[in-house]
Length: 146
Length: 490
Image (cartoon, rainbow over all chains, first blue to last red):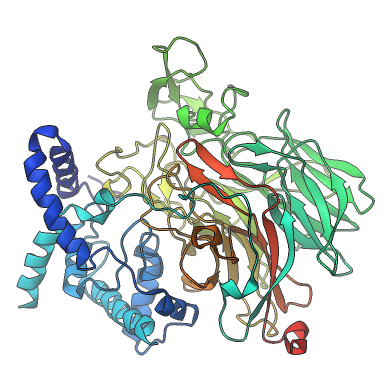
């Protein structure tokens, strides 16, 4: 290891998830796949992968208010680390972030899930993740207004 | 309490393998083919104080616009679309009533442009055969070659030239391949069978790690024929670790400059992938939009969005081994189905710079223009046209990405939507609407009060590739609050 070791590092968990998906897709495991698929349907129905109504979407054309320095910092960090897959907090490569509980978002950032890589505390310190969550809260309030 | 909730929630989320693997691709072009295109400015949403107007329609594959010194608007019809489809490239003047006057036509599409200078328009004419060149087209339609021998014949092209504050023509040269290695994806793009010797050209000497990629050979009739291809080399050619590929100029993945009178081409900066849009800020700094890696070919890369660079002359910006200043050879750029990209270059020891902004993956962030006047507002901010995703060919997208104009604060990298379809995300064809299809270029009016948007038109996607539609291109005007046109409206 030298000073240039990438800070993201190899992630066995995401590779394990990949093998998990391949395992499910194997014909012999179809029963397990069916059960998990049904469970996933419930999660999806709860809005885990959904987006917001179009009427509120246009609020994104107006600037998101910045009530605090933490929210402003969170916005800058969101643009740098999150926007490419969750543009405007909406779906793209990744799902929308308007309804996932914020503690779940923190866990997904730290652990990675599915197609999402993990962001360790070497990349994003705890207070930086908190700032991103604060920005998400402000963004959600902004697009909920009629 | 919150912590254990996090743990339980994350355990549930982790066990379901995430949305990306389990949802289908739903990109903006993934609809049944569309032939016609209604146009209705009311279907385009912009911030309060701005007004959208249709200026011209029925254009075929327009990709750029410019003003002459009398304030008249011109559009370049590319003569090409990914598909691929080739038509006649043209320079057109848009008259006040929206009619077009043909100024010049060519036989060498695609054309990208234009930059007006000293009575003529400077356009990059790529051509299907021979080398790409930059030409000057006079208002009488006469043509002069400014520079020839540009390597514009791979996936990406010699892009539109821009006049710099130093009076030189700056232009971006896109790479031949997705990530440095010629593969089957380039056969699907349509050029490998016609030009099997094309490969990327480094601007400076590079030392290779010797990674070689084994693929079937579509150029022979034998279905079992396979070849191994290395970086910066033609299809089927590879070499050992430590092999040095000599750099030269002109090269691919670079921004270069040349005098409008012709002469030697200078290297400005390299290590880009497809530096499509160039613009100088009001303070004279060069900004470049750079289309990020796709998930295709011999060395697919996942999760690489488009980038906005503030270009320092002499710098290297990382292609093919870095995205956004981050090395590709780490976990973040692989998935369950594509491997971690291997490092191709062994002699680059410095880390490349970081970009100013990072656009959405597959948004195809292309034309760029700066606001220069309070008549429009947002002075000093960059406006970028997003052509929109070409999923599933470039990779999966869970929803349409792009199909709009965004505004970027270059000091912070904050990206805000500026013009988008009112009803929902994606091109108008996806919602039977009359708004934006695929914005590809933006140009500020000479008085700084109106942003003109060049809209390429309809291009749906299918398993066989893109399906573009001629005569569906549009030019929109977005009048700012201080525009005389806006004030005159009833």
